[in-house]
Image (tube, rainbow, N blue to C red; front, side, top):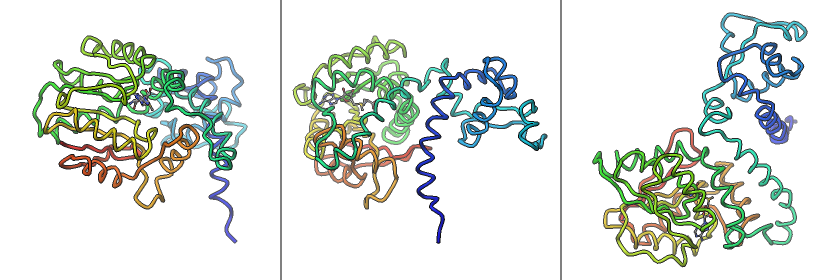
Length: 350
Ligand SMILES: C[S@@+](CC[C@H](N)C(=O)[O-])C[C@H]1O[C@@H](n2cnc3c(N)ncnc32)[C@H](O)[C@@H]1O
């Protein structure tokens, strides 16, 4: 008989979430941001009993969020001795970038958003039984309520990949030409996918299309990245916003097709095809399942997330979207695997 490891490791995921969120709220990552410390020193700085801090730090090492730079030189024995042990704890690169409050890509807002998503997920059983989503985020009023916060909270999740998408366009699609681009960011949210383009070239302009309530966030974030003077706004539902044909070099669909479902996604690809100049590029970021829907796990569960949150939302395989883009008229599609990212990016060239 095999032990039930597959099941217990899933169940223990909820403990890991508590360790992560509590560590952020307790300020453990902030407390290590100036350099490595022992558990006793960190506990003293923060004013907590050392035992809990020490146990938290060990768990965070196990989760890959902290490192033990001293391990080459020290060996440690019994738990009792460890409370004043000289073991040092340091931030991993990932924790330093995303879990320290002073970091520009601090994920604090997303951790709160994650709590909100959890509330929706508690209705999973009901939604599976009834076939009714918990909410309809693709309805204009609900979108205006939810997306200003959500779109800002996911900036840290996408920023590094967006930078990679920008590099890929310049190096591979444009074969090394450094030129200003006219960009349309559809369902732009914070404009996280287009900001790296504006930072890469001083002549690049961004048109951000989204609901008016979200575009207030877009303006604030663009100003923060000092590209606000090159941002123009197209308020509304994309289905109602008319755009002149062949007017953009690049169009971006960052995590929007999964709310739209199959039929509207095909229409949205046609919409983007029409507004791109010949030779223009559509960038698609999605959580793609493999063709047989067996992996990766996150996109598979994201399908459930969209079932909970929308009427027609869905996930795609990259093959499905590639075929859809070619059917819509695009000349070729290129997929690009970003390092450490769950899904490839899809580039469709007109
Ligand atoms: C998951 S967020 C993604 C935002 C951004 N593209 C990103 O990747 O960070 C989805 C965005 O799509 C916008 N959106 C959803 N449906 C839309 C529609 N029909 N027309 C315009 N924007 C829409 C939402 O307001 C939200 O900003």
